Structures are given as structure tokens and as C-alpha cells.
Image (spheres, rainbow, N blue to C red):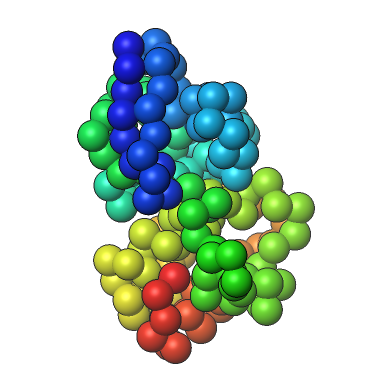
Length: 155
């Protein structure tokens, strides 16, 4: 089946089995490699992308459900000239280590900051509950997010 959607602001069209995962189509057909295959069971968050501005685990999300929708991946956050404020804050706060979880965390926190521009520490931690990070301990990730919120910047 042919599925059309917006991917990071650009029209995308793929011919794929509608039950194929969004993650596999993004990576194998469209060359968007930021979303990572982690557990492939929907529990680690490494593959998190935004569909119509809501975080979804792309490893479990059927590509057919993207028809007519907007999909955003970590590739769509930065501009040619600069990182997005959340990306820069994660660097500044050393909220990145191995990088396996980073794209999913970026997308989860982007969605949080877009719907709640001034989240509490508790709200940030709650949002991150679906993203497994084995390297950072989350403190620097939370601090980076709160810094972006305090600056009033778009994620």
C-alpha cells in the first residue's frame, strides 16, 4: 500500500505493508537513522518519534497509521546553522553519553516542552519514564530540560 505523510516538514511517500513498523520504514526506506532499534518491544524508548506531536514508540507503530499525519524525528530538530535549544542544553549539561537513547529522549522532551513550556522536575521525570538510559542517571537530562524551559526557548 502507498502511505503518504509529512516527515520533518517534507512530503514522504512509501510503498509498504501497512503493518510494517514505522521504525523499519524510517530507517530502511527513508534513511532516517536517528530513531534506534533498542528492545523492539516498546519498552526502552530508543525509537521514540513524534506523530502529530505525540511521542510514539516507532518499533510498534504500524506505518499505515501515519497516513496523512506529521512525523518528526530527531533529524528534524536542528537547522543547518544550529542545534535546537534542547540538543544544545543536553550537550552543555553532559546529558549525552553513548547516544543510544538520546534521539528518543530528545523527542519525548520536545513533546513535553511543546505542550508544557514550564514543566516541573516531576513532570520531566514522569515524561522520561518510557525512556531507558543506562549511562547518565537522568540528572543531567532533567537539568538540561529545565534550563531550556527557564530560558523560554522552543525545544
